[in-house]
Length: 150
Image 1 (cartoon, rainbow, N blue to C red):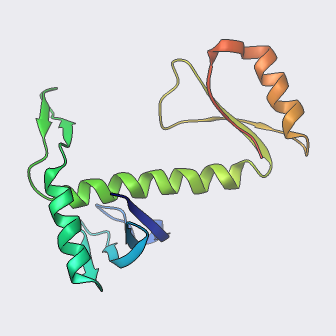
Image 2 (cartoon, helix red, strand yellow; image 1 turned 90 degrees about the vertical axis):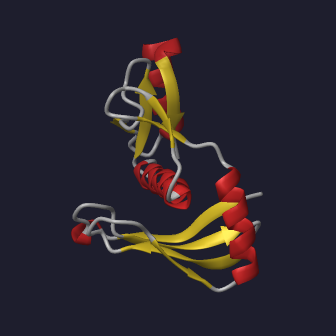
């Protein structure tokens, strides 16, 4: 079973308590609806165009074991709005991939051991991404845990 978001549009200027976005939902390669959030807090809205596939997706979502770390530091299971959790994770992944693609047009981006998972270091490649990547590998070696170039 494959769930994907495509045609993602994030509206940071309209985001208040949650991220304002819209995206097409694809289930097993077929567009079955749209997910959106108005950015004012609360859950996502889903507009389904294929109700049978949306029921199949719902059954798959409910079977997923999703956890989060609570304020107490305890591992808790998500019991409500599982689809929102999954869609938010896919939205974040899609945004990161788009950001990386934009950045690598002019830069090599990388992370080192100990860097935050959501942060990247940036080095301009000045039209020579392979040379910049080699320089980084020579300088940091095994400390590099992620490296992206054009």
